Image (cartoon, rainbow, N blue to C red; front, side, top):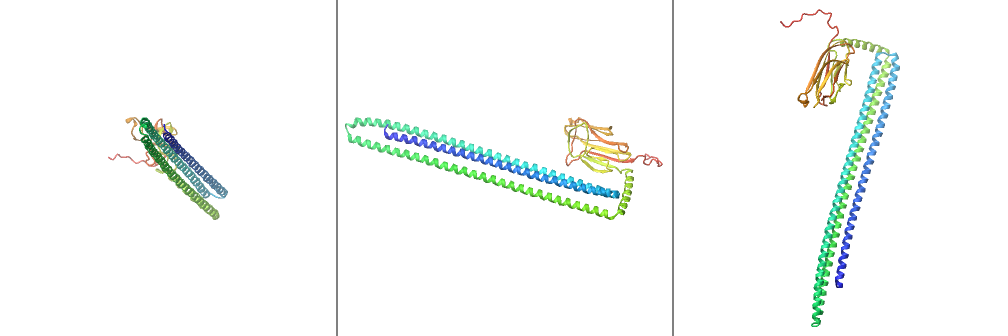
Length: 475
């Protein structure tokens, strides 16, 4: 092998090593970019956790402030109650009425505080859910970026293999060509040796021409290597520019969403603070009005208390008189929630549409007779899917009547069932609806299927002293 061929081989090997170094550099840059993306994802997660901790702290502060306000309202109510009890020593039923009024106001304040407390809890759960959604989105974005980085790495590996295959193929072709050229040169050298004795000058001219040809081929190889190097540099620059652009877009998007979340949390905080201040001012104003009203009542003297006592006594007598008459007691209790699998328990109700005489307690499901006499009770239900309906009406624990709905088309459909009873009750007797095992009732927020109704037909001994008129059948 001639020195020129050795130089060409050395240049080819050196070019291959440089190409491999460029590929390794590209892989290193890709790994650095993946590490940066991972660090940015961890930073986003850390910032999200900080926002969540801050929101939870603000919620705890608001809840503590609400608890303090409830305690203050309770203390003020107790103070007013104490004043009422002191003034009640010289008073009468009118003072008791004001006392009841204040107690109702206090209960309303406590209920309002409870509603606000529930509202804060619901808002807190909503904020936590929003933060969980943000975390889930960030996790999905991180997985997406990791997937894209993995695809980029695979594409670079594939391009590296293709480039390596191209280089190997080119090297092999060049080696084959050089071997072929060496063989031809050897053949020519032998021919030249044979012809050296005959034509020394012709041999010298042939050697010069061969040298020029080798030099031209060497220049062509160097130009091809330069073209390959330029192509690698261009692709590397395009890849770096594209990855930098994607990185900036992801960063801008995350910063924008974090800012929107901060603005939203700030607005929610201002709204909650405004609501608390408004409720505090309203409560203070109502308490001041009640205190002023109480002071004016005490200032007017005992004459008004006596008049009020007489009026209350007259109204009480009138109420007792009305309570002893027919149709003066009635109620209608309803439900708006399903019972999927009830049984061996008494049925309770959501509330009452009407409850004249206050005999029905919806929460316990118990009707207590306010007066002796005859009553009529009616119960309507709708069975739940795949469930039966087996219930009974009981008086003081003793069964008055039962009703059921079972085994029609395997209870795949809903159906209505009802029962009515007329019973003589004494004051204090209790009427309840009892459910047996596997009973299912259907009720919705907007569909009130279950109703328990009762009405006072006549008091005990009503019209017994009057002469009975003959009853005619119409003939």
